[in-house]
Length: 101
Image 1 (cartoon, helix red, strand yellow):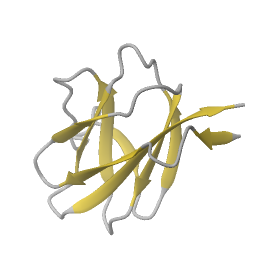
Image 2: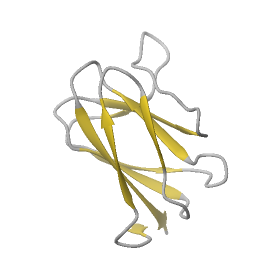
Image 3: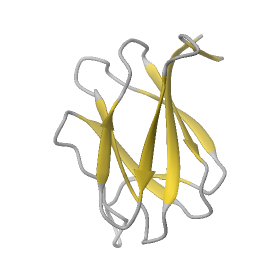
């Protein structure tokens, strides 16, 4: 079960057809990714230079569908940023940090 670390551990990433990124709040071994948009967001976790891409056959970012929330594990020392991109339509991604059982 996933539990957020605190009420103030959420950041917002505005996604569009160009990759964008934001720092992930510190702590926690898991990240909850919540897509508040009407289109898919493709995400990647990494360091400050991380970028994401829309899949083009065999490669691309991790899929978070419209209205979906997904919890993914991360290494808090090396995965300190999240990048997101859509196929062109704007969407908002909420990123929260927590720990699972």
